[in-house]
Amino acid sequence: MTDTRSARPLLGAALPLEGLRMHRGWILERQRDLELQDFYAPDVLNGDWRPLAEQAKALLDGHRGRLGLHGPFLGFRLDSEDPEIRAIVARRLDQALDICAELGATQMVVHSPYTTWAHNNLDNHRHAREQLVGRVHQTMRAAVARAEGMGCTLVIENIEDKDPHARVALAASFGSPAVRVSLDTGHAHYAHGSTGAPPVDYYVHAAGNALQHVHLQDADGFADRHWHPGEGTVRWEAVFAAIAALESDPRLILEVREPAGLRKGAAHLERLGLAE
Image 1 (cartoon, rainbow, N blue to C red):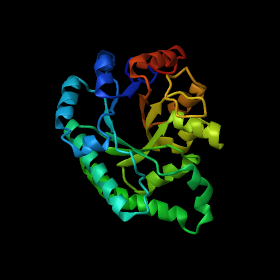
Image 2: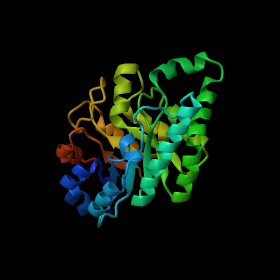
Image 3: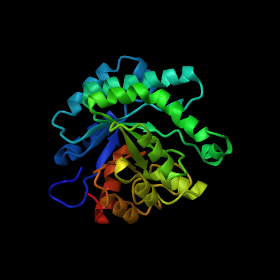
Image 4: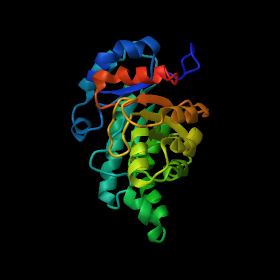
């Protein structure tokens, strides 16, 4: 979301409700984009999540930025070979879309199925790439159709992805405006440093205007640190230059392990002249 008072992009945040309470004034003051992270766990999805949703709605009163949700991911991949597991995953996605509908969320993050092992082995087995995509379609077909009707976009976030183009092609294979691409900068930097993947800005270039969501976190290229920007070795100037060339206006979402210090990373990016 671009702020009308500045050519620099406006930062948003991924927060649980506790973190939203801490930073609500900062979020509302500039109507920043927000991603809620309270609704992905199985016990929440299987339980009575409505009281939690009511708390969220109260905290969101007055919020006019774009709202998203982190979707479910614990304990599964979108490309499970087991049809019974795929059915469970499809139900989890549907449960999460119930919450999106309740809160008016227009975006939901889901995790890429591509692993480091897959990168080295998909071409070692005949039709393995097509079969992986087919299994993801079987898992997500109903969720994509529902998301289309709701005006909600499912954005596929890189996790272990070594090839930044594979996830982009997977999203495009649905032929739907309800499936697009997410980038996690720390995940990409881990893959770059530990598995020989390209640097983070290459992931932006690979996605192009399919990129509609970015998790901003810093890392050291070894692990998934979720440090504040400025604490690791991500080359932020290159990342933001690549983002600036896009027309898709991706949500730029700070996702850090220590929500209390969220504005530390925001201040670092502001000092660099990259965002506000």
